[in-house]
Amino acid sequence: MKITKLEQMLGVLQGEGTKKRLVAAYANDSHTLGAVSDAIDRGIVEAILVGDEATIQKVCMEEKIDIKKFSRIVQEADEQKAAAKAVELINAGEGDILMKGLVSTDKYMRAILNKEKGLMPPKAILSHVGVMEVSTYHKLIIASDMAIIPQPDLSQKLAITNFVIKTAHSLGIEKPKVALVAATEQMSAGMQACVDAAIIAKMADRGQIKDAYVDGPLAVDVAVDEESVQIKKLVSTVAGDADALVFPNIESGNVFYKTCTKFCKAELAAMVVGAKVPCILSSRGDSTLTKLYSIALAAICA
Image (tube, rainbow, N blue to C red; front, side):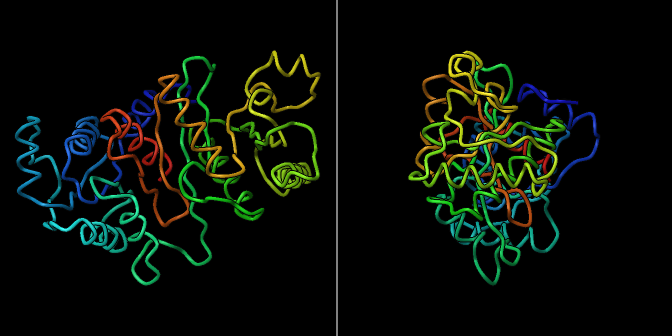
């Protein structure tokens, strides 16, 4: 089934009838607890909470969440130690998904990246993948990297491209259309984004990237707007109908996703990929629904 709305992920997971095991790091806030509770009620996950038990009990009581639905609560009042403990549980085989709770992003990532006790396979590249539902676009749009790699080099862009392809496959898109974004669709040797995009696109043409249509450089307008493609007389399998956007740097990716979510009120699911398991990296201020969709995305990709 090709998923075209974020809500459809929930139905697909319920239909599978298998539950992924989630470990939430420093799950002391109502949005995290509410999202995990909802995911448990829908039969998507089982969950271990790591955090301050007294705080968790208090929040559950306030939100009318039955605390008995969680597999267990691991007491740790310090957020850095809670993140490390959650990673330890994943490494011990007790979880398929890691989730960020109230812990700050830098401490969460520090636990994941720890060379001795983290979740990094040898030579791994981490990336942040988001799936957005924008009301003005005719399908879901996958975007990366928006939060992890400041200035990806060619090898990192290649990894990001493969990550968005894998995510698209998990969403039922058999041969996704991937746009390698630059400021222009014209090949400009003086712009590194254009050079890298052209190399990766040619690699796809030669079969070095599998099961996707990949093209670039493409400006965002021609990547997602058919009228712009017609006006500019661009011939491309991807242009005007992209399933995924690979951005040349963190600034462009981050601005794009925040523009979509804040100005266009797009809904979002997001995760960090490249570690041993999908790691949900939502903002501490994200809504319960965003966190629920992020759990669903991670569960589909786990």
